[in-house]
Image (cartoon, rainbow, N blue to C red; front, side, top):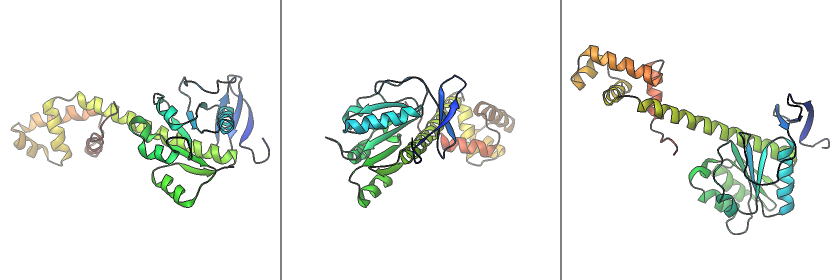
Length: 247
């Protein structure tokens, strides 16, 4: 692209594909052979879901994202997007504000289930300050007014993918934590509750009607099964366990 373009050639990747760099991000994406413009994404590559009722804009955005190695799926309405099964890879939605049927802003406020947490980058040809404020307060990554620079779009999507990657990593940690907690016996869970409440072994023994040696044994099992390095670590785990694991 030109001087202000979004893509910078970086030679070839180890696989022999042409490599490109998102300027300002320091991240290289291998560009493979041409991919379908739409259709279900495969593999573990980051995914961008584009929702715009303007065919030329959809095609343009799809080409931009594919040029840096991102998987892309295109939709002409928010309703069409919701028919798609929520992605299992890090994802960002690029969403036009003005859409037929459910508008972009309405879509944002009505999202439910797995789609609720997927980051959104809004685009519009008729933006205003109240609209921008509404979108950003509701958690949008960015709000770009057409025409926008390719690099601004890539920067916004990169931020969205980074946010979704962190969210998914946190969910995985919660799932793993619940799995470890599930291996505790009923008595060990009770001991863990008392330990994280700040009780000493002697106090726990009195509370549970056990010997202090038995409490120490259960406490050791809890620390080992939960993979906790310290009581402070166990307390943080107890707080995290309040988060319900995803289905």
